[in-house]
Length: 180
Image 1: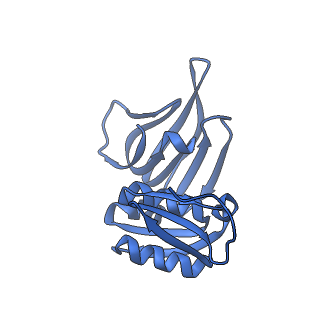
Image 2 (image 1 turned 90 degrees about the horizontal axis):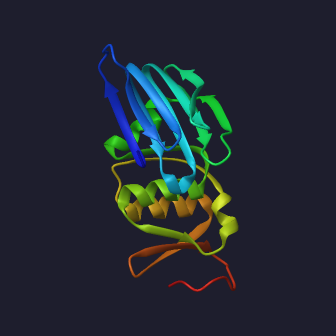
């Protein structure tokens, strides 16, 4: 799987397995979200209900990384194999299926990545350092322009559209790279 999907699996004898590169999510009956865009080099699994086992394949052998239960999340770096485990609000993570977005203290580059995937646009930072600006925001069924306007107020940044792409920069930026 390359992308993001929400699964609601009915209990059955044989496990239901989702493969995201070397990461497997094994399920017997649960609801959960997987975010696994190959370009992000990470797989994030969040459990809404039930229990899942997250496996990593190393040198051809599957190894259990961790079992997850409701409101637990694991993020695995697909390059290094390192992972972070945390409690989370699972309904917020899967709110994207209703065109809602909930972000708690995340770098704005992650927010823009989610918006790119959801709205089918290309978003680029003119100054790469500004992508680490952290934001907390909730958006419910909003058009992209409104979401961008609110994010710019929250972050103190500015954006412009050109040739169907969105470019983000500092309001007082001097220099930088040219927008294509």
